[in-house]
Length: 369
Image 1 (cartoon, one colour):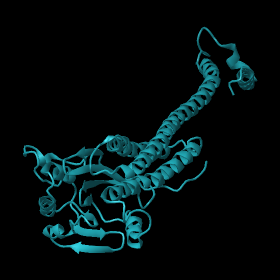
Image 2 (spheres, helix red, strand yellow):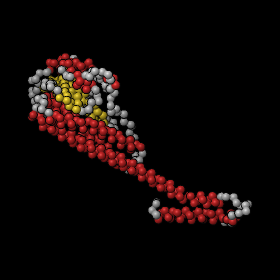
Image 3 (cartoon, helix red, strand yellow):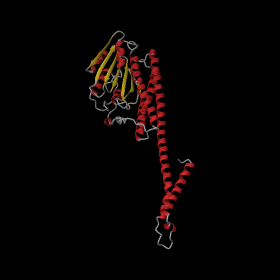
Image 4 (cartoon, one colour):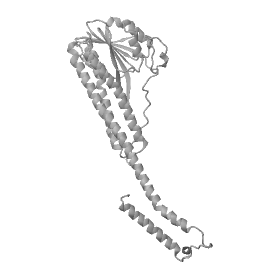
């Protein structure tokens, strides 16, 4: 039997965050529903145009008003959403609806897009491979596209957007001069692009499990299959509603989305369709692997039961013979003459050998083993 390194169990991930602390509160009440975070909330402004780029670390939300110049493209990056007062201040400066900020603080939002008079609000899920490569992790990503700003919220510091920041710094591509909506597209596209390494990882896991399922019949294989299916479900919960949201963006007639940038959102939609199609293939594969595992386990159990049945069948007549000649009738009126035979013991073993040999011959002829 092939040996595989024992993986430590993946940490349990909640599909739904606790929202009990919000029960009974008025709509628009700002309550953070996630777990406590050690890092402080970071507020970074990326301000740029065709010729210049500047990055600013902001301490107070009121300072954001200085960067709402229509002559530049402004990306406001909020890293950490656990400071309710900080987010309240941001919403007041940028005139964001409290219901939107309530959704930002609720980390169990379904990917979606909502249209307002002055901005567009979009929710996505950022997915990545865990450091031990034993599954995937995800966090909520919120983006608000306004006339003079693009505002994003992420739960934790990460390097996902570093390539985009580098493109802005170096002035490569269209990012410096295609406006706020192109910046929003570039951010969304980067989030979706990170679904592909996740898909590749899950595909490799599915292929490995497909090979292992016919070798290892222990519970560890079943555990790994279930973990794969759970990760695929997390990807499905992120990609399916996001495709619907991007479709709504494509059909929108909002003035915040320029006609010349429409092909880029079409391309984003195509990427999501590719992700979903590949994911569905892996989900079907994982289901087939699970069925194969149970079928193989059932076949192994049947083989074991057949062997035990054959052994039991062989020993049944031996038990019958031993029982007959184990009865003590020598002093009774009905004597058993075989008990007094000089070679009765050898006759008994000879008869047992003939019976066993005959049964084995019949079983082999019938193809039982």
